[in-house]
Image 1 (cartoon, rainbow, N blue to C red):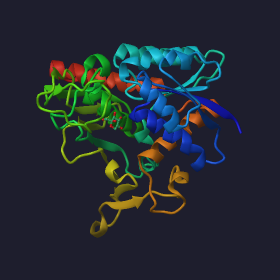
Image 2: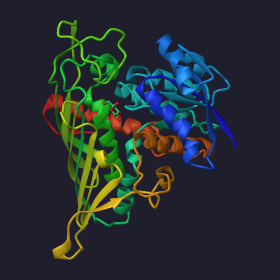
Image 3: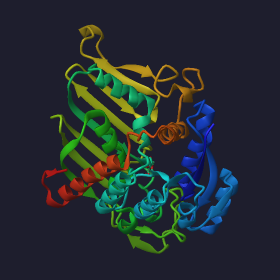
Image 4: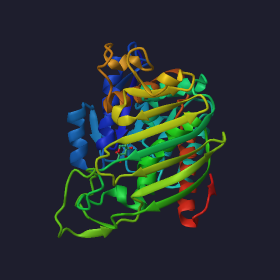
Amino acid sequence: MKKLKVGLIGAGFMGKAHVVGYSNMPKFFWPAPAVPVLDTVCDIVPSIAADAKDRFGFEKSCTDWRDVVNDPTIDIVSVCTPNDSHAEIAIAALKAGKHVICEKPIANTLENAQAMAEAAANAQKGQTLINMCAYQYRRVPALVMAKKLIDEGSIGKILNIRATYLQSWSADPSSPLSWRFQKKVAGAGTLGDIATHVIDITQYLAGDIQEVVSFMDTYIKERPVQEGGVDLLGTVKLSADAKKEVVDVDDEASFLIRLASGANGSIEATRNAWGRNNFITVELHGTEGSILFNYERLNELQVCFAKDPDDRRGFKTIYTGPAHFYGEVTWNIPGMNIGYGELKTIETYEFIKSVATGVQPSTTFAEGFKVAKVCDAVARSAASGKWEKV
Ligand code: SOE
């Protein structure tokens, strides 16, 4: 069985998620397309790098990402750093002949996103280097099932789509100002961090977004600064007298959309919604029926078909399991269900399968750049107050 040496850059929350994927993939998907071997973990903070080596089971650790990219024995690189370093690291890794999976959003600026998509295209000369942007939610088995139903015509022509991504972790003003609230690092707030996921899902299910009209707002205008700057996603509260700094990104990005297909819709995203924790919802209405998905119940898909008799038409629930896409991750027994870890395992399977077969995944850097272009139109519209083209 082919082995692939992994270099992981950024050992925080997302780094851990990638490790879960690499470690678990061959346990679920067997025979695996290839077996990932945890070789080097890199984090800019020395204690985090050293801890991650022991905790995650890597062979080595380092604090300079160049040591990973320049290591000729490493086959694949996971980029899990804050958004402002994605382009530099991913482009260097591709130039060094590595396959790259990069966390979302693809980059902190449209220019960097474009540079990454171009570097990925250029890297294909005489070789196949896989490039993947980590939009994992489109791989939830229930959403892949939704795509199948749509492609089969089960809900007819899509008229509209309503999508939300609501979280609560930044609703508390005492939760600290991490890089996610700094434009120079993150590029945007909620728009880049979570709206991008539902933009990706929308385009996956219903096709390209062509035009948007939006509003963006910042509800908590300054936050206490946490020394060290490590992103703890609202899990610490700082005292009222801690030094505060200005938040220069959006807490909410919401917009109406027009799709190339002629369908209409809306996307709403905020991290300031108490009670909504990872509330990704998508509702599609077509000429022949409707589909509804809510990530907080990710093993379920609600479907309603117009052709059902009047007295029994309504939403029914499909529970996904072994009979559905990626059924391998459900422990063979219906109802055991999947969670975020299994979802990252599915994503890793798709990445490693691409590396093994040389066929690019559905979420390439080019696809990440497409999402970035929608975000750019959303930001332009929030400034102009008008419909803006993507
Ligand atoms: C924080 O909002 C975050 O970690 C996002 O950055 C991820 O993309 C999302 O999947 C979970 O929440």
